[in-house]
Image 1 (cartoon, rainbow, N blue to C red):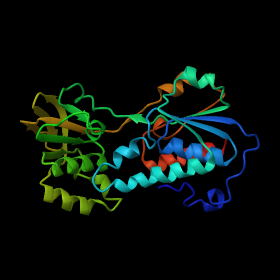
Image 2 (cartoon, rainbow, N blue to C red):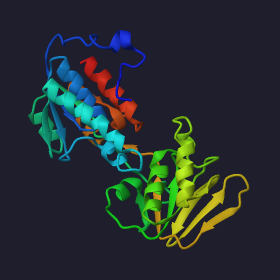
Image 3 (spheres, rainbow, N blue to C red):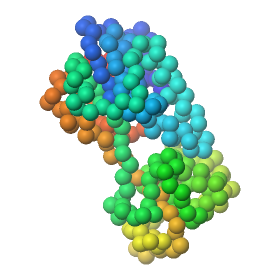
Image 4 (cartoon, rainbow, N blue to C red):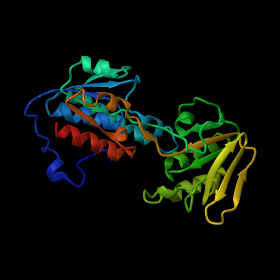
Length: 288
């Protein structure tokens, strides 16, 4: 997950990173895994690298993921990349939001946009006062009611982790999923069995094979995918949606045609997992 050379050691392994023929000023916007990997790699090749991050800490969504039960080790990704930045001599500017004018004022030779992604609700669930993103819950922006329905459209740790976290706090939690079984994405990572054991101990209710169609106050409507029968949840205090993010690429398109060497990486290119973000950052910087 942290090593972009895995499986390609002969071309990307230790000693394969070549010095840049012409050192340049590289500006990286975004301090998540993709931005950190890009900044580190570019600096190791001899470029002068400045990394801007709007928050006062690095790590992006990895820091939020690490708040989920059993995921604290994800912070090691951030720690390792941070250490690499310091050794490579990357100039950090934390609490510094990137905007087109500020970037152009720096007159960089190359700009790498790693601004990540934003959560989004499924169209049928947006707009409700009691509908929240997983990210909002992890950032503790809102206090949820005692009866929580988690709508899982990813089948991975976003829903499974937040359900476990809320249940451990005493909430009554049910997961509704259109998949054949809840936590389908945890199977390939070999996490499913242990998560199911914990979920059953916590009393998490699992309802697969259903699609949620709408929220009306404390009532949530859905349909069974195969029988076509209507499904209804009543007395729901809060709905938490775990849906695919959308790329936060506004800065990239605002700079397009204004910067000669402009790149977008990580979730800003396409929302994926950490290993893809790190690989994106390495690839772009290795070719600068």
